[in-house]
Amino acid sequence: MSMEGENEILDVQLGWKAIFDNLQAKYAHLLSNNSPRVSDVARTMYSMIPSAYLDQELHDAWKKYFIPKKELDMNKEEHQEKMSELLRAFEDWSNRNNMWVKKEFIDQQELLWHQVKELADEGDMEELMILLGVEEYGAD
Image 1 (tube, one colour):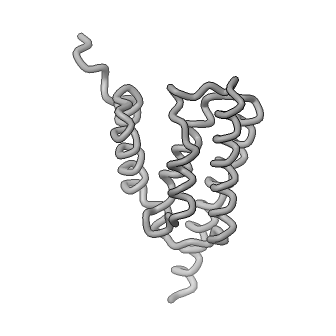
Image 2 (image 1 turned 135 degrees about the vertical axis):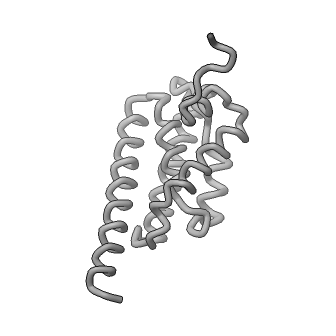
């Protein structure tokens, strides 16, 4: 591989890592402020991870701890604990994978697909329409 190609891959890896690290910090901040927006950040982080790198541990933690924003009540201790556990699962995942990943971590189509799939699975049509930039159905 040429030096230019190696530099491009390194730039992509560092860019992805910076974005993911920033989201982890934002998640922790929102969690400490009991903000329900923590759910949005968690969804973004989860959808950033290509399926080839999504391990069973993180997948299981997602299923067990993730709470959609419309159901999340950060005044409930149980909800705070679940979202805290999910943050720990993301941190553990990044430690297991050393955050040095391949170029496919930036695939925007896969990122969008995972976000759409997650919202569709939850039946959250409002958030899905916002994500896709669709005007409200039936609005004139």
